[in-house]
Length: 154
Image (tube, rainbow, N blue to C red; front, side, top):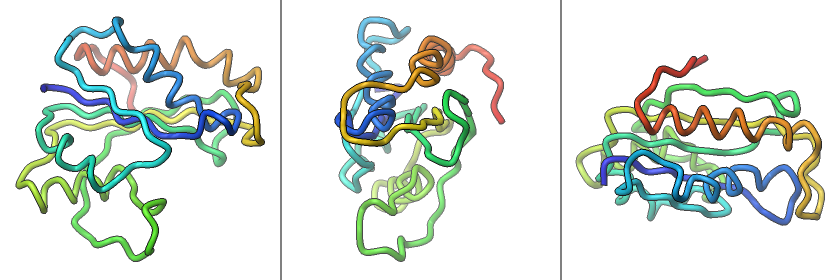
């Protein structure tokens, strides 16, 4: 495996499911058939092993802290600090990268977090209008990252 996509979210909590939706849309629309796509409600320590085998990682998530429909791409660097919380909800992409390096001796050379701002995290499977409108651009940015094309990272 050369690339891995790790998407998290809850498909039954409105905009929180956008990361999962984007990951599912990638099937059949990525440059490298070897790319592994992993979807879960949260990032898990067990995913560190898969992460350690990849050269490129793309994490996808929704955010309550961003304007609805805003898309942000930023580079992720691993941290070696131990999580202080007792739940896996505290497992960030940085900590997962650090865990891969600590336990398996390596982490991806390049990693990015693609975040889509959401406004509705209530029970339900519908996305808000701003998130629906952001999906094509977010999908395009993820595909560009996976195909090694230049993407504005901020």
